[in-house]
Length: 416
Image (tube, rainbow, N blue to C red; front, side):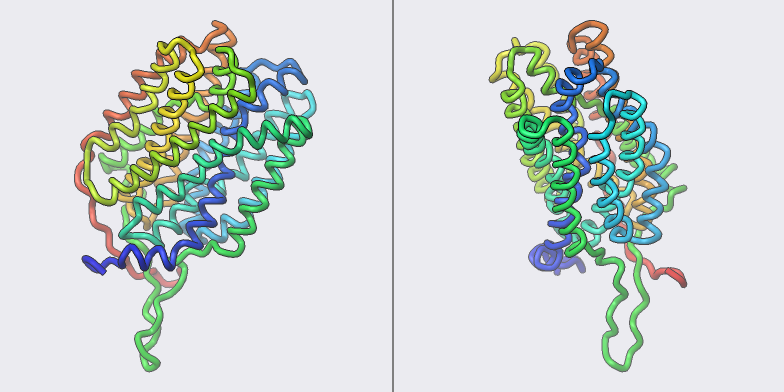
């Protein structure tokens, strides 16, 4: 131990099963965004829908999850991660299968997204991070990086898997295969391995002594978080994060790539995300740098500029996609890590649930706005040009947040 903290080696020996299950589960939460671009053309061909209509699903997701994410976080704080995760992942997989039943009805498309959005509240990063951050203290930065790499692995692998499923079984088979196969494997891992260390009471020191009281992690109250400058700046930066990930495949196709080539290029976003999260986690555990969050939040603007001014060649699109993946992965790690460090774990579900709602709002508005701009102008150029300064401003908001506060565990009140 150092400074009263367990060694990194002991944390990994004890915590790897929890981290494995959480990483597999969080990857499914990224499937809708990672694969929607692959479904766009098949849905357009089948029903004649516009890209704005297809992207409307993510707006529905934002509308549903924005007000309800704090509620889902409160359930995690009250009942623990496992009690929320096991049924939540099963319901999310089944609701994803329901997309195969929409037919040509836009109303059913919206309804299916609303149903999925409600289920997805219980598999958001709030659920997985509480358990992982409880199991890892000394190496928390790297552990969070591995956890969030699940979303990047989904971004890397899901488009290719979806392409194969659609080619062989049609777009309906794509939704069924992902909902039952990907979510099903993750659910089994969660059922077997996912337990929250904080749920267990401390063991007695000897046979003659009563058990020590159950301890809860330290951290800010919700009211304190609402007045905390660092937390408010993180929330504002998150709200400004704009992503075009669901439109990357259509962008590549519009510039001459085939759908197969576009899906292959998109894997670079996942690869970049994994590498960036691991690098960010490594440095976050070792360096208290004000520049790291700034770079993480601003980096996607570089990728957008490469698309806008790079001439549209396949190598340039591939490089831009990799940079966008690096920026998105690094920013996602920083959002979770900074919230954990500045707000603590005591009321993490409620606090991060609120911040996650803002992130979901941006994830819903961005793709819908991009689809609308494309439908009106037949180009993504205007959207990309406007997104770049917004991403830089987001980075400036998390520059120089100050030293991390120190939170100590506290005895649980009676009945907890």
